[in-house]
Length: 68
Image (tube, rainbow, N blue to C red; front, side, top):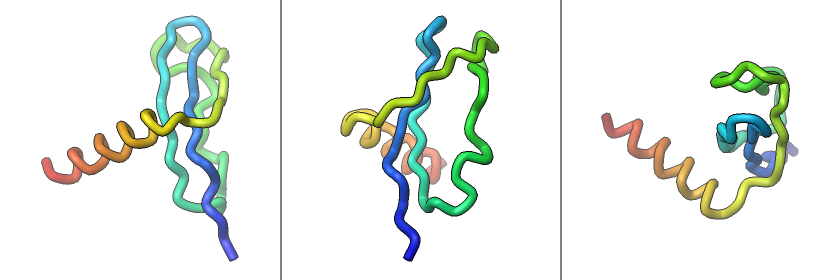
C-alpha cells in the first residue's frame, strides 16, 4: 500500500530561497526534485523536514491559487 512521504523544505544556503514540497505519493518520488536554486543557480540546496507552519502556509497558498 502506498504511503505518502513526509513534507520537506528545500533551502538554498547562499540566497535563503526556500520552497516546501507536499508529496502526494511515493510513486516516482524525486524525479522532479530541484538540483540547483532557481534564483541564484547554485547547487547548494539543503533538504530538511518541513515545519508545521511551512506545511500550513503551503496548503493555504495552494488553496488560494485554486480559487483564482
